[in-house]
Amino acid sequence: MSLGAHMSVSGGFAEAFARGEAIGCKTMQIFVTNPNRWQASPLTDEEVALFREAASASPIRPVVAHDMYLINLCSPDDALWEKSLRAFQDELERADRLGCCCVVMHPGAHMGAGEEAGLQRLVDALDRLRDATSDLRVKVALETTAGQGTNIGYRFEHLAEVIARVHDNRWLSICLDTCHVFAAGYELRTAEGYAETWRQFDEILGLGRLQVIHMNDAKSDLGSHVDRHAHIGEGKLGMAAFRQIVNDPQLAHLPMILETPQMNDLDIAKRNLDALRGLIEDEE
Ligand SMILES: [Zn+2]
Ligand SMILES: [Zn+2]
Image (tube, rainbow, N blue to C red; front, top):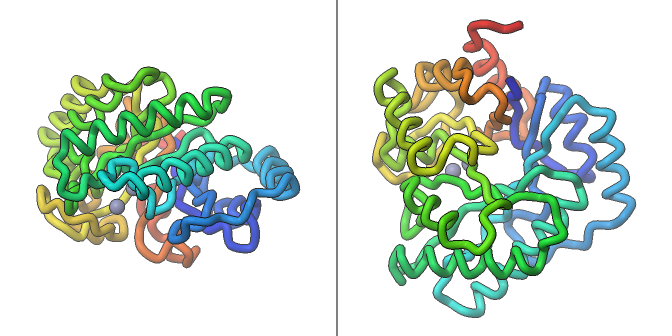
């Protein structure tokens, strides 16, 4: 069971390990660029060396990267799409140098062009990115979304379509976010709903494609399409959903990562982590 949280890299990328270890993370997620700015300062060889040194001395693995918020690989606007491509290529190169297993990415928003147009835009972007970075080992984990606004990725079928259309889908995996899928309309609280959601996931995407789970409670209701994360046990999902996830033998090998509010406050992050740990029934 690998439980962890999104950790700040303030003060240097390697600092995330000390933070994660202080609260008992077994895995973690980081931003490898500034999440709210297009231009990131170049990653130096020294930063990479420090990070890799800290990684090899740490029990935390894998380290997952998350892309920044401005990127939209579904955009119908050519200038924004090209800008997003360049920024995402930078994300991939940085994450690969740091030894991250994957870059979790939000598929993007079609901005009124329609879901089909948005999906094809993303497929074209991924094909170009794959050609430009075929020497890298890092994977791209497509994240399930809540379907807020014109965001695609709120149906498992959307992600399956992307995987089916790209030239090389071996580098694509899936990140399932509990808050997002619930807001998108997938039940996780009841035993029947939980089983049905995973049955659909396995049928449409295949459980083997799943690489990361984001563990977030939801402030918004089932099917609301509103993406608002809550602390574990304090949202509409509640403990019942998370108890099923942390005790599910099908998911036991996966990194499960918190992205609950105020994650920069380590006490709050630890409280959420403790809430999850407390649900594990057979801890060996
Ligand atoms: Zn997420
Ligand atoms: Zn979210």
